[in-house]
Amino acid sequence: MRVIITENYEEMSKRAAKIIAEQIKRKPNSVLGLATGSTPLGTYKELIRMHREEGLDFSKVVTFNLDEYYGLAPTHPQSYHYFMFENLFNHININPRNVHIPDGLAKDIKAFCENYEEEIRRAGGIDLQLLGIGRDGHIAFNEPGSPLMGRTTIIALAEETIKDNARFFKSEAEVPRLAITMGCGTIMEARKIILLANGEGKADAIAATVEGPITSQITASILQMHPNAIIIVDEAAAMKLRRKDYYRHVNRLLEEQGL
Image (cartoon, rainbow, N blue to C red; front, side):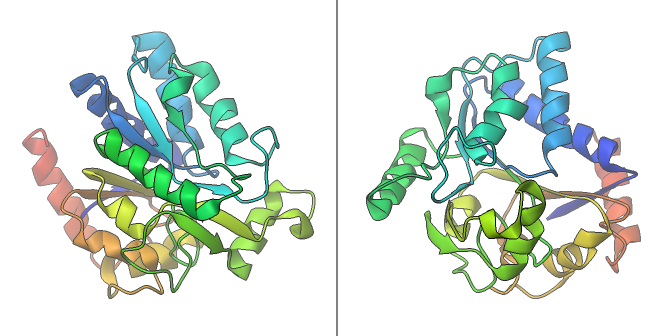
């Protein structure tokens, strides 16, 4: 696990976008796993800039989103389908047929989840997965207690997640109580993973993820087992890491070697 500590949110976003852009340039038909929420917005903004100003080409890129609220139509302003098109897909030259987002209105949830897994396999697996993290240490919607090697499934949202996400809705009562999410096992099969976090509110979760025990109570902690996971955080999110100086030392040495 490589930990990169950046000065602020903007630098964090640009570092992540650069890694994603390098992946696309190296493999134009890359399969990307994408996240929603406020954290990746800066990364998406930078990718859009790279597309418009530097010609970053998304025409062959395939995407799979991590999750979707169950019960929301794709046209709902708070659905993750709507979020992705508003904040990224409408502004780049991606083929809509290459976009995959869980169906919040799926009638046969079990069959849909099995098919989503099969679509990822048919695409050749995820090359690079982008993640955010919840204040309780969850990734995607794998709430505390979720199986660490689980697959795409429907899950009940924790009360803390509902309260955190209420800011995007008119009231907490409108926040869906269920979601379809990639499981931790699905996420761990990605060839490379980037996890982003910013702000003091994520400091405890980052400390537990990077330096705590691997536990289903902090589902992001499973990333300690991944051979190519990069944690990019700003100073505020890194404030409770005990080994910050070591992580900075490692990055200086790697960057001197162009890595």
